[in-house]
Length: 417
Image (cartoon, rainbow, N blue to C red; front, side, top):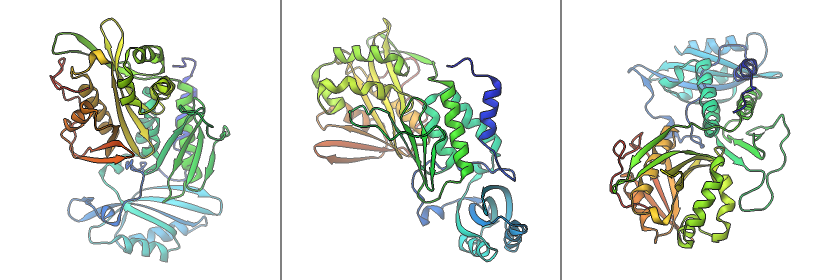
């Protein structure tokens, strides 16, 4: 971590996360999906008590005296209470974003119709819930704190800051070779529904939200969060768990990053060609090329299994893949069939649940019986697809546990990779 970062720099970056504005901000949306909800999803349960419903709404009005008053009057006419409001200046226009409490019998079309008659255009509305009642400074400080503690949190923090969007981190030099993304200027690029930001370690971060254009205010907040991440430098939580295998050996499970690159390469050298081929689905000689990308916290979270002597004998990856999440496992041959793969997978799923992911998928082969068994052992709904001879198993995370499934300090006897 860069210890030369002063409190003044941090305060300046945090201030930029919720400025400029003319009114108190409502909390950023907490939905971290990437696609707009269907009408059925928008009509899902969100009632407060039995008589009212929470809504998030955006509309564009002329930036002239009385325009906001006209909107408020129109909403009041339908007994709609404005709980919070933020504004996004756009030159001659302003995007006003509301958190509303409306009578439970009032349809969204009634609200948007009233707003249109009061001068609002391009109106967007969706159901909200009690999480949206948290005040904006508290929410933004929480996102900044999560990012400061763990570099892997940046994509998740951006999603919670900006609502449903697709975020992709593009390395300057792709692991598989070829050209990297076009250079992004230091100040970033905002293009209607797409923003491009310079990644702290090189390359680019792209954020796309096709259903709702980004405002300059949102762009400034996202840019400030990325700048905070860049100033703090590489960092991951250093906590670790010591577990006992059924035969009595102790192993340590901890977070890993690019500082473990040499130890991971050494594990590759001890793995058989079959084990590497099962994991990377390509030429075994190319396996090392992917490690720097896989270990980078910018692209997800990695767990390492380490022996008492300090050797890494297993790696588990949770990888952010746009609006999807991949899990991948590699266990050294001599340490397979001891429950290590199952332990890693349980912990990766717990991390995915904590991050708000709706599902995780694993790319493997039908002959990889250990991985297939480990996915089945999750006890979650699974979908199976065969793509060009490759098996893709997707686990839906509704009802998944929020912590490792093995008993504290001791691994079960599950026969996983």
